[in-house]
Length: 211
Image (tube, rainbow, N blue to C red):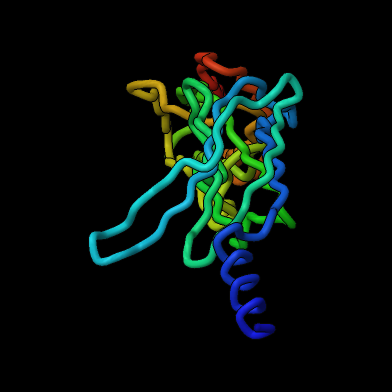
């Protein structure tokens, strides 16, 4: 009788699952401000002979503070994930879907990061050309959002002589600050300059460099 009771309790525990508190936030990666009103889902999935089946466990909208809390009963043999729908015109997300016990699960806290698009075009002009000895290099060495360090030491534009460049169109880039360095060699002398651009969501900006 005692063995049967233990088995029944075990079955009940497995079928009910363990309770887990989930806290969800969504933050603007450039400003640190929270996104209110974004829709979120907590989904579970299981794999069987008929393929993978999904079930929405919870859904809702982030509150005015850009957060939500839920209680989930985790069951065995199911995979659980959290998803937050991106804001409109988004150009960056850290991760669209985050899994329970994955790299982005911080003890039940899931922090999503987004940033809206801005639009940037380059316009470079040698306005004081001294001939073939002139040389220009432009570096993009950092951004608030989505910058890859591997590209930090390589020029994004360079040329010698009376080098000029005009972008044919605007490029989609995440909003926020962008950090640039440009070098000019003229008459054997190197001068280095630094610029910081800030792009607001949806802004179109032309970065003019006259050297």
